[in-house]
Length: 204
Image (cartoon, rainbow, N blue to C red; front, top):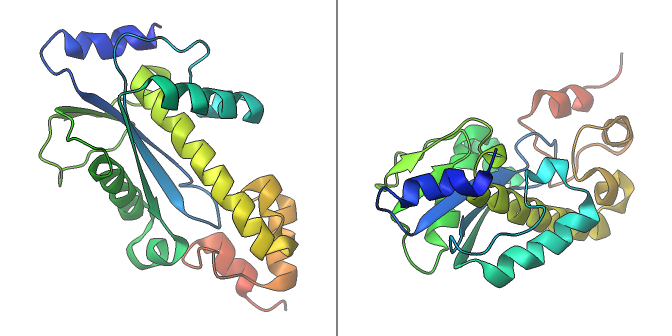
């Protein structure tokens, strides 16, 4: 599938300033959820652009710089773990996406959002399933969100080195879960998540 052609099919109908929106970090047990909104020019094609989950880390860093160098606009929204605990991960994801759109320098006239709708934003929008695999602008947003979040988790690793955030980025690996069991949760753990709560219970 030509992910650039998907975006172009909407431009042909009128909207020119199309923002692709995606997030990184819905599933981890720790750290923020990060969303990005990316407005592509519709002219440049970035070689290798695809879903961030299918891109090795070093290549993601390269694509991150390529996107920043040729896109028209980029916005980022970050919701930390304590707010995720207060409002739940779906609402936090939507809030991060809303913040990413508002972080753009100018309001887009159309949104392509990966599998989520944003009714609070009165902008025309489409929410394709697995959007990062069908839309160039959503794929670009997935790269930006993933790289920003990974960098944040490396910073958190410096504050809480015993948890290994630099390696697993907060996801529920065996090593991470063992560390929660051994040290208890730290301030960036999502204490509303069942897996974290279960590990907080005393051993019988």
